[in-house]
Length: 327
Ligand code: GZL
Picture 1 (cartoon, protein in one colour):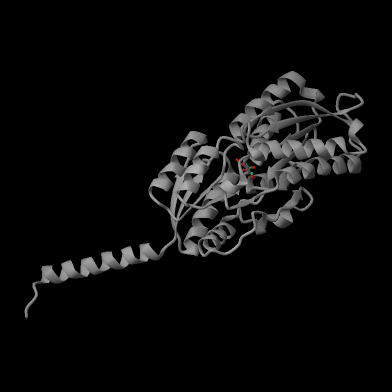
Picture 2: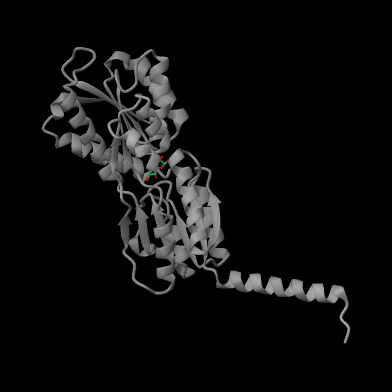
């Protein structure tokens, strides 16, 4: 029996389509809602999630919410209607998730939280993989306190207290709320607390641009009264460094600069003598996330909440550590 070439091509095409569909059928389908691309840290987190999805052999449906909670809620609803196997998301703010998580539960789609924390009924999500922002805040103040003591730092304005200004992260974000909570807790329990005064604290929304703008306004109001900056992420610290230099002051010398995240840009600033320290917040959570998703779908028990490993880096070890940094 003779088959025409086009009939054979048709049969081959159909076989490939069936195979890829079969492969797709075997792949776990994960719907993931990411906050946006507001910082070096967030980009590293997104890149890691995508690379980890490849390594895990899962089908990733990825949505970028452009910094809007309503876009995250829309994406989660879309994942539910697409009947994905499991949903992951980074809650941009702590509250406002109850209804959409109830819809996922009704659809019997497990939810895994990554990075930031949220305030909701814990039965509405299966696991949380994140970063301990309260401990990061404690570490920031403790580093400042140790550095001030070691260098016998005195107030630039000749007064009796070292003035601290704070660039806070996104309003309502657990990373900002937690870092403020931890910083204030360490401050209030320090034997040296009377050495310090928190002069001003304002959100810079975790972005470099806003960090620069708010630092410019701090300098306009308090210039030579400012001794220390705690920026709740490195992007805001890097923006503030630009503002400090534009005001004719020396970052890391006139004003001590401590950030959070430990991104490459901050390592370079420490190596260049323009920043003093950064508290690590590890964005490389993808492998643990997909491993947890697979366990959940296989019916295995998983811990309700785990934190990734994090450290503290400063100008004394920045050059040595920099070549080993993965983000
Ligand atoms: C922290 C993370 C924060 C980073 C910022 O866990 O959610 O969001 O510190 C990022 O750089 O914008």
